[in-house]
Image 1 (spheres, rainbow over the protein chains, first blue to last red):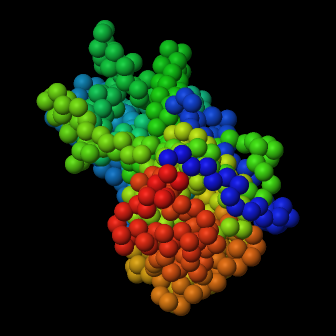
Image 2 (tube, rainbow over the protein chains, first blue to last red):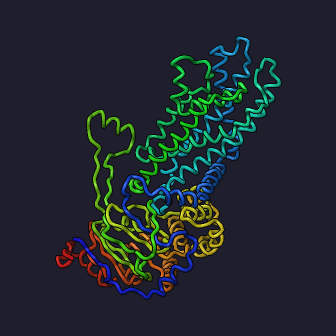
Image 3 (cartoon, chains in turn green, brown):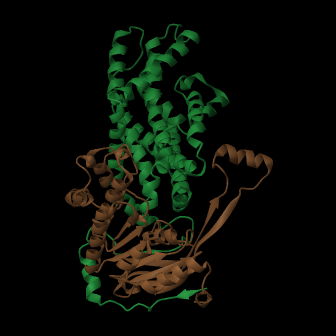
Length: 314
Length: 269
């Protein structure tokens, strides 16, 4: 049933065709060739170029999504800070009153400060997972209608999570400084040079978060209950991470909880810088960087190698 | 998405789309729900995943010159929509290749309005940015899009979930035609909108043809296709059964619909 119709239609004169193409200077490429992928990955050079060229879409999508959320709740941005703050209080009560920790001479406020900074950091990563997980399935119609690098959708989730994380930093700084000054037993270092690491720490969480967003976005296309399971998974992951407990509370082989945990090293670094006021060890930096780029690589490969499948599966 | 850039030499002048021995196959999951729970339960029972391979397009070759208005007809499941998505670069070919010369604008799935909580305005901007346009360019075209869609007063700034199906379709069509595409792909979109808007969209498409832009339309409205198109392609179960003058092809298709079987003369074609 092979059919070759080429040449059956009279060619229109070439001046018509050049007239058609003269106005569309907006697009970089004039001629596009769609071919089967020889390997599972598309040509990464053009992919990344297109990804970068259309980054504005990801930013606008994050902004509009945020706007749409706020239309429904006027206190939207306040809740963003309040939610982890209240949760931190609950965890603090659990840890200190029921667990009886912090009573032996050390400051209870230091425990609260540790939980708080850990939770804020944790929520940045978790939001990447949650928003990123839903990003592709939510963008269904756009995926069916247009060709664009699909990784822009999880990127917009990362941007959204980052924008929600940023206001928590100054809030934390105020609580950290005021509480530390008021509590006489507090051993918090206050403002110190090690805090200059904070931008690097945020960048590492962001890279990890993008990797997680890519990973869960793909998972969610194949298994639609991923986001439901993630709610429980994320909570268990949180309890296994050095957020409610201090990294130095575990010893020996138990320390695998920190190293085998993709967010373990970076949370340990967060504790070292904010609570102890020390320089994090190079092994921690190595662990955190390794996990961040490892997640980005794994998530990126998983996503990009399968994204051509998305249009059929949505 | 595969985007590869090639020299113009590979594409003869005057061609908008060249399809070379294109085959498109994909697997669909026959499971009731695609969940991890089901997958694990199935694995526990030792069952295999039930999938079906769909051969949506089989070995199709076709050249479409600039300025052609081509209608695509065929029964449901003929592979029309899949072919359109492949030309748009949304689905990569399984075999063969597609060369597209020019900027493609699509109306394949009412693409604007993918977020119902956002206003029509925001959705237009998002859709345009995803299509690779610049923000400034979109702002410039915004008035054209809005005035062409001609929504009732104030609706352009209201959430899209408040739109009626007709308004939805009008806006989607307006976005697609106002992107100054070289190649416009439209799938079943002509059915939305009232008579007046339909006339307006015909007018717009005729104008686009006069500017030597290429239009490919999938529709079941044969009368409309005859009126608009100079060429038509009839697809049946992934095969191209006929290609040629629009009236001839639609007549053959109509005959098939009435008789209910593929004309034997066409089977070897």
